[in-house]
Image (cartoon, rainbow, N blue to C red; front, side, top):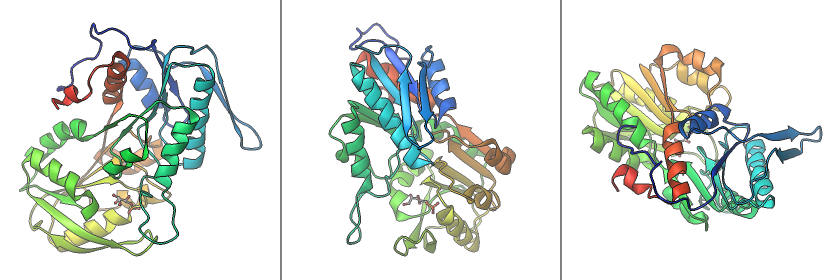
Length: 332
Ligand code: R5P
């Protein structure tokens, strides 16, 4: 990252050495983070017994060490979440000095409020579980809503893919015809505004309405002008793909030309990759907060660009270990 200085300076160590542990959900990303930090992932056994219980054993002691558990809590969510919690508890019981849950993607963040009677706030439950397991800190990227930070009483670093996506989008924008930045719903509008402002592009919004828990979203109204223009269409995550499909249908009806679809978290639930790949989209730009299978990558072919968050996470881990500011990486 061009605007990110390296963390390995002369500041004194606050904790023991960095110990990186990977769960089984995002091994390639964990490897890349380790590579940036010039470290090896620590050896551990993770076994799922025939009764579906998960068992963890560390190969070496972590007493007094600064430990990081890298695990995207993506599909299969229940398994990946439980695996991370068990890893954290194992480190706690082995007397780690500090434990950070590194979740490139945090699950259940769409359940962040009681917006109908008799429903849970599951994001709060997940935050509680992470703390109860023994984590001292957490690290994640682009939460569904910034306020979810308030569900934790431990400190955390919520990072933004903005810093790594912008250079790529800037290059693309140069090749686009009268580009406009489109938000597929009002929930993403504020972030879309930040991207549009940074790229110096006009903004358009789609008013989307969802009926209760029905994943079938309805794109209703376009606020802004896409006629005869190339568009960036961006959302935090694509799960079923319904939001994006309805958005693109509306954009095409309104005369949009080439569409570049940008999404931070490639959740891509069952059948979504097939549906999204079949859309009239010129380029798909996403990150590796959630790994994408080779089969899915093949569906998108050379229209797909995956921008890695490994260097960003590695840099922040290096700084956290040395007690250095993370904000200064972004001139904050
Ligand atoms: C919604 O609130 C989010 O920002 C995304 O629009 C949503 O998660 C996308 O879900 P789906 O792909 O299932 O429409």
